[in-house]
Every structure is written in structure tokens, then in C-alpha cells.
Length: 78
Image (cartoon, rainbow, N blue to C red):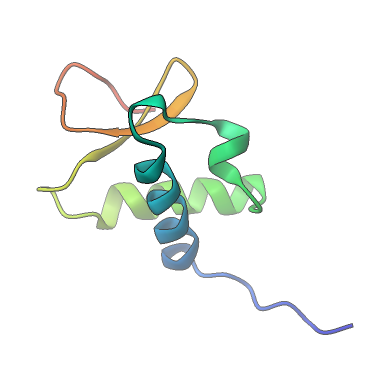
């Protein structure tokens, strides 16, 4: 059995960011947003997204259990 390479936070972060952006206004549930990642990988990816996405892009937020991106000031992130 081939060993699997541990995925860096920037790799999983970019993947999750792209899927959430693609989902649009509907957003994704936690399970959909996590995709193939384990919970710890998902949390590290969320941290990477919040720390490394430029300030002029959309914000990554969780609203009513749905992950989405927004420019709105009225929506709070998780």
C-alpha cells in the first residue's frame, strides 16, 4: 500500500475555498465543505483561509451552518 502524503493547510485551504466560492449564495454544509478531509484538516484549512486570503477578497463565513463567502459586513464568521 502506498503511503499518502500529508496535505499541507494551503493545499486543503485552497481546495475548500474554491469549492465554497463555486457553491455561491447557497453555501455548503459542513460535511459538503469538508469533502474528503478529516475534521482536523478542515479546521487547519479554515485557519489558513482566514489568515492567508487577501483582505480585498470575499470573507469565508459560516451562517446558519452553511459555509459561504461574502463581502457583507452584516454576516459574522465562525
